[in-house]
Image 1 (cartoon, rainbow, N blue to C red):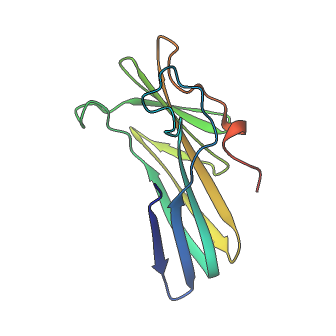
Image 2: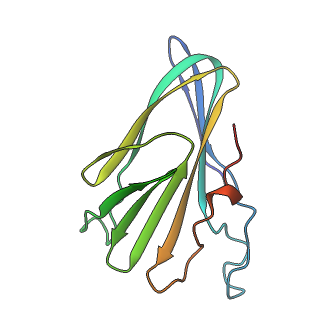
Length: 136
C-alpha cells in the first residue's frame, strides 16, 4: 500500500509518497510480503519547491525521547533495545531528539528517505542504505 500526497505552492508542485521496498528475507511466513524498510520519497513535479523534512522518533508510544547521533549519511536513534536509522542523501541537522533539513527541489528532482529498524540483539532489517536509496 502506498500513501501519496500532492502539495501545490505558488512556486511549484511537490509529491510525497512511499515506495515498496524490494528487500525480503524475513524469518516467518507471517508478513513475508511486507516491506523490511519504510521508504518515503519527495519529488518536485513542477516548478521549484522548498520543503522542511523533520524526523522526530518517539518510541514506546511517545513516552521516550531517544538519543540521536549523526554518522556519515545517517542519524542513529537509540532508545532501550530499539535502534532506528533514517538514511537519506540529504544532510539532517540534529536538534535534541529531532533532526531536520530544508530541501530545495526543481522539476523532476526527487529525494529518498529510508527508515530501518534494529533491535540491539541484532534482529531487524539491518542497516544497508545502499540497498534502498539509489543515487540521485
